[in-house]
Image (cartoon, rainbow, N blue to C red):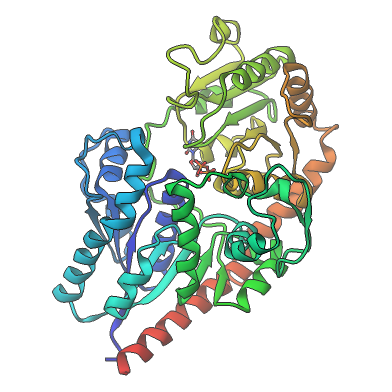
Length: 470
Ligand code: UDP
């Protein structure tokens, strides 16, 4: 029994910011000799395939061709493929919480029965609150994967404590919290948006439930770097095995994971001087007020800098056809590119990029630091609010887009000019170089993330063997 090969069952979550690191995690696990069965939700698979204009049924074919033992499948979320999931998020989450686990159960049962020569274990996103029940039912080792910083994990983890002390819901207060283990001090202003909200919706309840569930996981993996969040991680580790294994980036071969077609701006970027282009993106999910878009557009006009701006369909709630000001694209034709979606990592890696105006999604932050690009921060909701503090206050590798409540184009232009001026942003650049090399060191052979990952793999092997021999 003990010599059976480990086999990870991975069922991915539906959001782009979760899919990207989860796919990279699958590849990383397989590169350590673990067999993986990876399941995307059917509609996610369809979206990825459509975005590539492809009929491929196996998104991991290239990974397997390179020698990795990854099997790919899809799983239904219970709705027809053409169902508009965004029209009623509450309905989707309630279904995901209550009925979807039956489909996971069926997949797990099928795998266990069809090839009992493996030692299976479960790897699920921390937002997959169904993981505990499935793991328990089949006696599987349960691994939870957290795609955001350890700081955010810890705040959710200590929700009950924060509620007892009256700091959640925040209710507009600005108070310093210094009693959460491993977090020296944080202002309630920097809590994730869900801690500010007073009316709890299905989504809030679901996320909070996920943090009750995660306490039962055998292991937690986090897409962060030990040296950057040492105290928080060390405190979490006193509660359960917690491994910082980031940043998780893709390998050389292509595994499609983009939910939208990527427009290319590579040639255009190559024609621009180094450090002269601002990249602007608010990620895959957040919606933004059109007034903010207009001030950003105004700021780009006033500053006169080059830019690549991702204007995602649906990004502005009331946008209709015209999201950008009339004539904006004509006026900026020579110095700006507006795209609905792009290969962000490719754009950030271009020498032409000198700054990133970002919503502070965690993947975007890691990618920006990796490429040594300082940030201008405009967080919109969820963990982005807390991530801003990490970027601006803790690491000092970015600045706020606006200091007051309201954004105006003059301030936007000033912030853009500051970051794109190598001289004025010298301090930011020095700091980002330090954080960048910490990220880079972490993923070298003897780096902390690599060692943590190896340690985790060893512990999983031990644990599944122990379970099997009982
Ligand atoms: N992304 C991309 N193209 C774009 C915008 C974003 O490939 O035009 C990718 C980005 O590189 C990142 C992910 O989408 O890996 C977004 O994740 P993040 O955590 O930054 O933000 P979220 O979308 O979850 O808010």
